[in-house]
Image 1 (cartoon, rainbow, N blue to C red):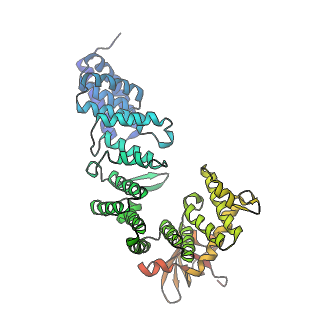
Image 2 (cartoon, rainbow, N blue to C red):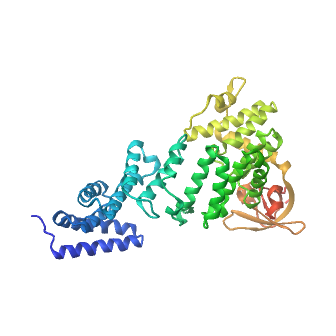
Image 3 (cartoon, rainbow, N blue to C red):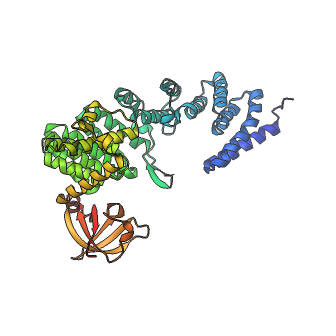
Length: 453
């Protein structure tokens, strides 16, 4: 027997829906999904009988929030057929499509044609706004395209679908596997992507102007882009590509190291100096890039400095060392299942023997890291010191030099076993003069226990 939508059922449905909204507002995920599902069962009966827009909208949201996407899509079409001229209906319908077809992780997008069909449908149905399905869709499409190669024109097309005023400036902090992550605002992401597109299209002067605009308009940045670090870097890179601004770009890149000695800034400098034939400087900056790179388990990211060292050792006629760097690149590419060029395969061979086959990745990376550390010492200031404090989590050590200056180093930069280090031990520190002279930073990038300690 069919249940009729009497006043009591309507009141119960509205009450259940409001409770689900309250739980969702408080981010009680485990509770609100079930609450929306409960509300949807009652709202279905009401919608089937009354066909009023108010109940249709509530049912669309209840089904969407309880993750019954196919049913939500079916109901959305019914509501749209009756009330498709109402903005509230268009937006609700768009959110259903977004959650069902667009929100998925990039790696889950197996049918690109359907993905873009859904994205275009949302953008045709709704308008841009800070918290609109239109803007959420554009940002998701841009996130998808960012990870694709040779899609610059399509990326630019989607970037032009929104303007800075349409975008949120909220920087979110989330927890992922126990790590706190600072997520850029939509506005910051948009400016970053637009600057990168202009740079890739070799529109360097426009890129410089756009980075200046970003630095002027953005007041809040995510942690990794603190102070607009990304835009300052991209502006400097663009200047390096314009002969009359090249010197200014070089000074700006070097200045960024005084703010944050990031591995990718050293990599930028290495690439620039190699392009100018300044091999010794390119060698130095490549070493710094690899030493500062934090994720020693993922060398694919530092392909550029690895390749530069491969080229330099080849110029020095040190063929085996050159081949070892190319072999490490190939190993890294294999881990990520990247396509390996015949050129890399050829350069990783010595006298017809593949060093990729000869050296496992672990052995090769350990050997080369030891080489980089030995080679970089010549560019570092040496300091003798005594340990004053070892943090309980054994992540950082504080020391004092013989002249009373205080330094620190991370355990990751200690050449030895962490458990062998304790207070009052004597250590030898190696300080990067490129950064320490500019900002007073006194953190060693290499530390060793003094044998006499």
